[in-house]
Structure formats: structure tokens, C-alpha cells
Length: 270
Image 1 (cartoon, helix red, strand yellow):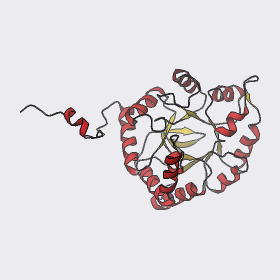
Image 2 (image 1 turned 30 degrees about the vertical axis):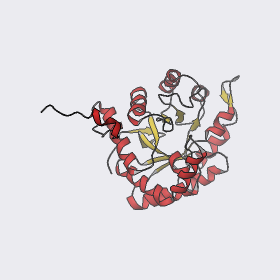
Image 3 (image 1 turned 120 degrees about the vertical axis):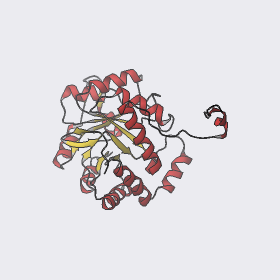
């Protein structure tokens, strides 16, 4: 397995690039029609094939919700590659913590629908989240929080609750960010724990070179990027782009070709 740059979360080594799952499970943030296409296209075997491509390039971590098809695909990819895949599970109900444990999750981050509902701006706390975190620890998983709200990270840090990382939306378009991106950047950079940034391409609204250049150049060495992919080709491209950006060099990733760009192709003078 190739090694992608890594960081540490709760004592566990994690690649700084993590496979997202919205493009596996049908959360396109575009239309019901696109969601339906994704859900019909992605079988367990097709998800497993993409995960195998991730593992080959050193991306041995995947973030996603409680879904049997995802857990089965992870298990299949592990069998094919002989590599343990770190499952960052985001349950939406407390009873799903047991499911996450039973399906081999290493990390368990209550989903945004749980976390953000507990934000109390008056007391600057997450009222009611501690029972979740205690149960996650008791189940032997590493606890964190998934959030869309910018308040979550500073409130959790200042209250000292038992979390090891955060999932936070961050992209150059400000898509689904609740405050300006410079504010989100400051929150991430001031976080006491490593942050996993999500939706770096704004659910397909940003080109990979644009979106990845922005996030990699503004997060810290301990932080991570979670990116959704639909094929092994996208895995290759995103990894090559990310490595080039982190190393400060040209990626060599080929540009798209269309007939309208024919006149832009450089041809040396005769």
C-alpha cells in the first residue's frame, strides 16, 4: 500500500485524505434525480472497488453513516486488500452506537443532526452530548463530533468534553458554511483537536484543483480532508492533485478536453 501523509487522531494513525461517502449513498446536494441515479448505480461491489483503489493509494479511512451496504463494502474491500480500513461512523441515533461497534468502526462521531441540535448559545455548551460520548468510549471507539455549525468546535474545546476530533464543512465556495470562510478557517486553525474538513469541492460545485488547493493550503498539518469519489479514476486524480499541492509542485494531472478548447492547446512553432 502506498503511504499518503498521515496524522494522529486519538492515538490512531489516519491518512490526511479520507474517503467520503455521499457519492456512494445518494446524497448529491444537487437533485432527487441525481440522488436516485447514485443509489441505483452503487452496489456493494462497486463501492468496494472504489475503496480498494483508495487503499492502494494509502487512503485507508472512510467516513460515513450507519448503512449496511457501506459496512459490507468496507468488509469486502478489507478482504480483497488485506488492509484494515478505518471506519469513521456518524450515527444519527444513540442506538446506532452499538451498530457502529458491531460493524468494526474505529471512530464514532455523532452526526450533525445530533450535535448541532444540542448547541446552546446562551451557555456556550453542547447540552446533552456527554451520554453519547461516554457510550462511544465504553464501546471502545474514538469519539468526535460531526457539525455544520461554527460554534461547535470552540464550545466543545472550552467545555473540555471528551472528543478527539471534529468534522467541519469547509470549502472555497462557502457552500453550506454558516459564516464566511475566513471565519471557518480561523475556527479550524484554533481548534484544540485535529479537524476533518468535509465537502472540499462543495458537492461538485468546485473543480478539484480549485477546491483542493484552497483547503490544503489553509488547514494545519494535523488536519484532514474528506472527499467523495465515484470511481477509481477520481481516487487517482484527487490523490495526485493533493500530493502535488502538499509538496508544492505541478501535479501533471491532465486537463479535461473538449472541442471548444482545441484552440488553447499549445503547439510549438514550426
